[in-house]
Length: 297
Image (cartoon, rainbow, N blue to C red; front, top):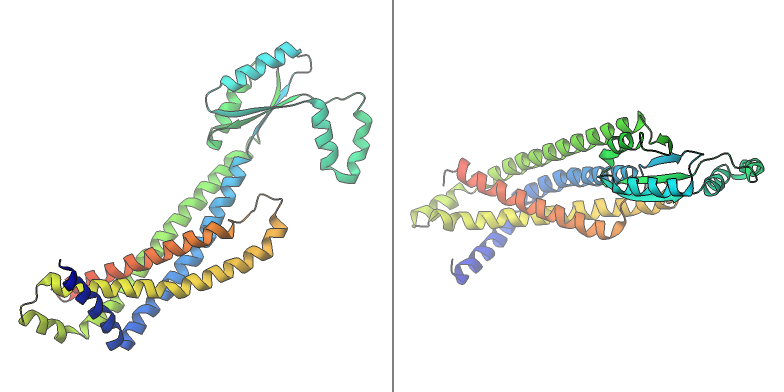
C-alpha cells in the first residue's frame, strides 16, 4: 500500500469518528464498559495469583534430625538432601536457633521457654525447599526413610488442599477472563455493526466508483483501532486510580504477611499496556467482522 493511500485512510478514519458522533460515542462506551469489567477482574485475578505464588514459595519441608545423630551423620544427611532431584535449597537450623524462633514466636509469653536454654529438648532441623512447590509431597516421602531422620513435617493433608485450591482459582479466573473477552468482542462487534449499517450507502457509492474491498475495509479497520484505544483510556484511569488507593490503604497492614499485593509499578504500566492492546484488538476485530459478515463487502 502506498504511503499517500495509508495517510488518506488515517485521515478518513479520524474524520469518520467525528461525522458519526453518536455512533462513535456508543462504540467507545461499549469498549469502555467491557474493558472496565475486564480491567477490574484482571487486577483481582492477577493479585490472587501473585498471593498464591507467594504462599506456594513459602511451602517448605522441615526435616528433624534424630537426637542421636553425630556431626558426621548430619553432614551425610545434608549431602543426601541436596542430592535429591527437585531440591532447590537446603538450610540448616540448629536446635538453639529453633528454640530462639519458638521464644520469639510467642512474644512476651515466650519468655517461659528460656528455661530450656540449658537443656534444649528440640532437634536440629534441615529446611528443604523444592524447585517446584508441587513436588513437596514427593520429596518429603523420599526423605522419610533416610538415615538420621527423626521426623519430616511439610503440612501433610493441608498442602494438598492448598495446591488444589490455587489450581481451581487459576482455572476459574482464566475461564472468567476468556468469557469476559468474548462478551466484549460480541458487544463491540454488534455496536460497530450498527455504525456500519448506518453508513451502508457510503460503502455502496465507494463500490460503484470502483473501490476495492481492501480500500473500503481499511478506514473501518482503523476506526476500530481508534475506538478500541479511545475506549481503553477511561478504564485505565479508573482501574489504576482505584488500585493505587487500595494499595496505599492495604500495603502497611499486609506488609509482613503472605497477602502482599502486586507493587503499583511496574504493574500499572503492564495493565495499561494490556488494556490498550485488548481495546485495539477487540475494536479492529469487531470492525472487520462487521464489514465482512454483515455488509458482505
